Every structure is written in C-alpha cells, then in structure tokens.
Image 1 (cartoon, rainbow, N blue to C red):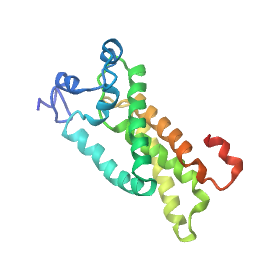
Image 2 (image 1 turned 135 degrees about the horizontal axis):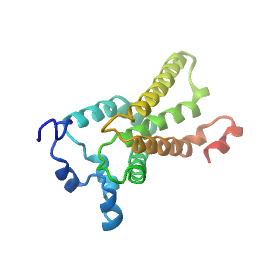
Image 3 (image 1 turned 180 degrees about the horizontal axis):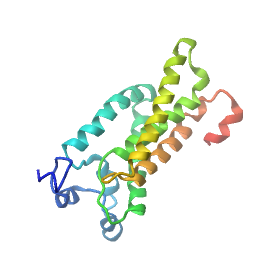
Length: 187
C-alpha cells in the first residue's frame, strides 16, 4: 500500500497496477496486449474501490444471476466490462483504468431492459416491487452517469458498459416480449 496521496483507494502504486493488467491504451494498441480489456475488469485500484464494487455486485448481481441464469449474467458482465474498457481506451487513452464499474453499469442497464421487456408479465401482487425496482434502476443510472464526471471516475467505461448491457439484454431477453409489434426493437 502507498500513501493516500498516491492512491486514495487504499491500494498499491499505479505502476504496479499497470504491471498487473490495468487498462493502458498504449500497451493495448502498440504492444497488442488485448487481454488488458478483460483483466482491467478484475483489477481494482485498492480496498476501497473493491469494497464499493463488491457491495453493488452482491446487492444486484445475486438476484439477477438467479433470475437470468449464470450464462446470461456472465455474458452481460464480461461483455459490458470489456466494451466499457474499449470505450475508455478511445475516450481517455492517456489514463490507466481498472475496476468492474463498466461491467456493473452493464448489469444495471440490462436490468432496466429486462424490466421493460417483462413489464406486462408481472403478477398483480408484484407490481409495487417491479415499479420500485424500475425507479431504483433509473435513479442508479442517473447517479452513476452524474458521478462519472468526478475525478478518478471513468465516464466512458460506465457509459460503454451501460450501452452494451442494455443492448445485450435486448438481444437475450427480447423473445420474452408478449407483443410481437415490439420485438423488432430487440433484433
């Protein structure tokens, strides 16, 4: 661990994080280290960063994995995180990046798409829960996008993950739409 001035997330120096596989656009492009697009999802800047991401994942991820299945959840998580890393490389090529935030944003975006796709399939007693979840997801998306403009946050990774997660959910769950006239949106 280094001082809080060098890493406010209670973690190692950024040179070590770079060696461990952080998103580094120059290394990805010039040295062909494409694996960094995935490893950066699993790497966190420090204990604080890891704890924040894990708290969100444990809160939402377990419920959604049980609802969607392991395969769909993992596909959305990894694809959203990888696309978020790629978006971050394009938007902020001079910055190191790490963390599962882009993947988590993808899960949240997929959750909103799933709620909208299955909107009319809710049992009458579950409507208040569905409405509460939809409101919570929308507020979460707004808060993430607004807070992404703060220092040490990666707007491109968050937005890229959100777009990929939403798109994948539309493709994966679009067949659940009851009204065929809306299915064209998910293909």
